[in-house]
Length: 115
Image 1 (tube, rainbow, N blue to C red):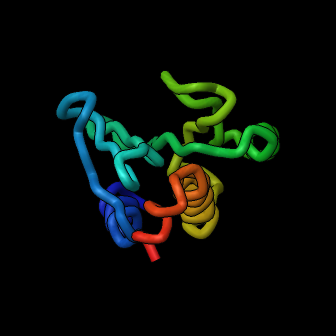
Image 2: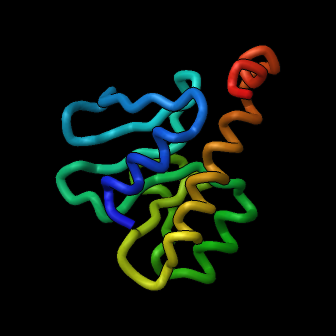
């Protein structure tokens, strides 16, 4: 996976917008104004995604490519490297998980708009 395919994958999800709230070097993907993925544009090989805390620990223990979220809550965010042994399917699963966590945290009325 590269930044172009990551961007296309994220933007294909319902209600997603890309923003640059932290300046021109960090691309942020949001669903209904809530972040679910961040990626640096200066060296786009790692991205941050939200993760269930128990699953986050599990992934970090299993894969060297998954680390506690850089500049994020270490409990709820992982930094994931697109370089290494993770497959594109595994990377997409992590993106999907992050997106799903954010959607589940939205009020029911906003969730309904995404269907």
